Length: 278
Image (cartoon, rainbow, N blue to C red; front, side, top):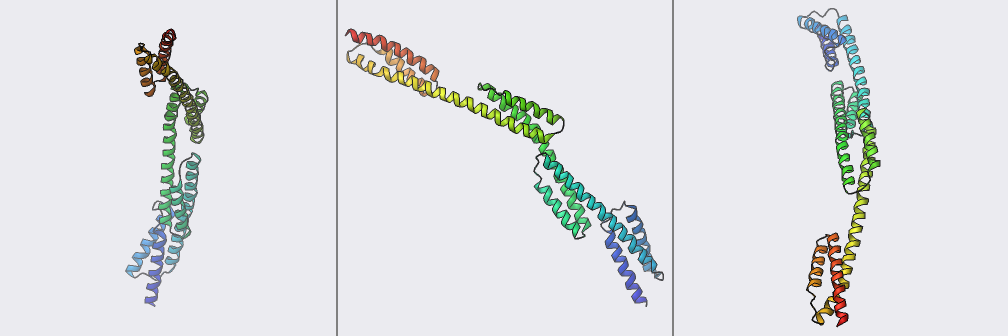
């Protein structure tokens, strides 16, 4: 009957339309199926529904286009996975890209081609951005590690091993081997900072020992100063030198402190000779 025929045509047209919605408009199979869909719609609207073979051909053409689109998205799934893996191999953080890829794979499994295509596109974008960020981090680290090496050298450390690794990092970066460059940079930075810290520790130990030495000399001179004052001897020079030495040491200038303490020691020795004469 006419009513059943109209229902059959309506169902086939809607089914073909849904199959073609996510398809690439530039795909020849999709373009041909859409032309057939337009023809079927015109026939339906004009009441030309005698030839039902039009419907079967339309559905086959739509299914073919849909299948081709699904295959393209499966290829996009593999390409996105490769892009994420490449970024990860550089040491990039790809958590967001992997999440987008998983959501794309899930929607593809459910047959939601348009959503899958969009999410896989997001995954590729996220992977590309992560790769770019990682490359920028490596390039910026080249200068940062060079600064660490300079600081190590400035405090008297020997950063030759770190410099060698920095050179290897620059060569690897120049070849586009950013994963290797990043590894060399981490090792170079660690060595430079260790060398710098060792030298700082040595300097601190030297400062501590010299400070203690200056304070010991000052402490040894104090009894001589008190004894001289008990004999009413002139101890102004020793008192002044001791005060200056103590002030300088407290301010952290241990080298000047040791020098002044020695001068005070020498003056105290002369004062001690005067005490002996008394």
